[in-house]
Length: 263
Length: 290
Image (cartoon, rainbow over all chains, first blue to last red; front, top):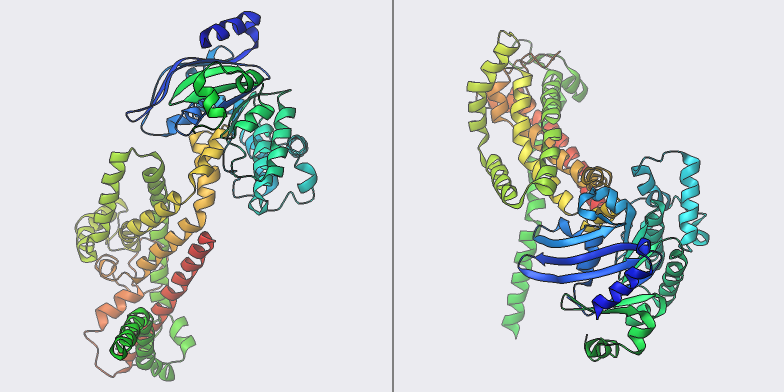
């Protein structure tokens, strides 16, 4: 089923495929975290990834920017491609500049708001002050944070609220101009209003970026994702248009999970 | 009921006493030093004592100027900092960030062993290996110099600096590093732009504690610095430190003489110096915790 779907999308337009994963297996020590995963992610779509704990969704996400390899016990087989180029042949820092990531807990660096946003661009060699100021404003506007912080850019970033910190992290990622943005349960620690703001910015961002959203909140996937993938015990059970997954899933397990029968 | 509450009372007081014992000892030591040393300042004014250039405690007339000793201590300490701080910080980074797990354990054990070597043994090794090497390399009449002392003391300060710096580096949240890497930082960029930044107060505190150890060290320094009480001009000449002076002269002085009390006065100066260093280190450590 899954493979049929993949093929029909491939026929629609191969140039549109941003990320392609082939026969990906991931182990941590002896535990198999991800079992022969095959899927494609289209350019400018939001792919939602749902599934219970230990379903392999975060391992999948962290493979796309190769953060998994920081773990000593990590092993993998199979391949992942970004624009038809094997990501393991890219330098990790080059890959991670192109594939940004937002973590579950906001990871602001212990410095000012301005320094947080410009950290990436400065690291990649942009030193012109006007250029940096422009990037900062643009990035903060894209995450709807600009109006709240424009008068206090020099303040310590850790003073912001949780929701603001998370949007600051989004700005910081945008400031390095990635092509793909990975969201790893970005709203798990946020209140509903902050969540709404983050979702709003995601919907805006997909015009320019390809987005992969791992979430524990199935409703969030229903609200923002174009397509949704359901993972269970390290396997991809089903991937389809979001409204289909939520209204007429093919697999009984998907239906049970969405209806909250387990998870 | 009554017995129980008496028991409670006694246990409570005992625990309280043990708790404040350390502070009590520090205060007692300071009072003791003051009692023995303060009388000396009636004979020789503090300014002349600290600023005096000549240390001739048993000639006639006696001269009690400890400036050469203070400068000797500071010179050896300064040299030891130059030797140990950069190496120790690099080593701490290697252990916590780069070394593979097995090597990490071996290195940490090795560092603990280094800390456990008695200073007299280090002084002995320095005397037989380092001192001749310094003499030969720099073509000096003697190898017993400030430089030899600095190298040896640098070695002795390393375990303290390495293990505390390593703790500080490990205490940096893993998320900082991942956040930096996810933005496309190389391993080195993440390390030096984020991890060092966050661990800096701890690293400074570690260095200060290492320095405290160096200033107070006596045995090794007495064995290899030459003990000449003259104001040092370079690293390549013999110096005498505050600690070595006390250790060398205490056994030979007449109990109750000016010389005897002057050694206690040196003790007070030394106590104040290490006190300042420890307080500074503490301030940095606390800033780290906030």
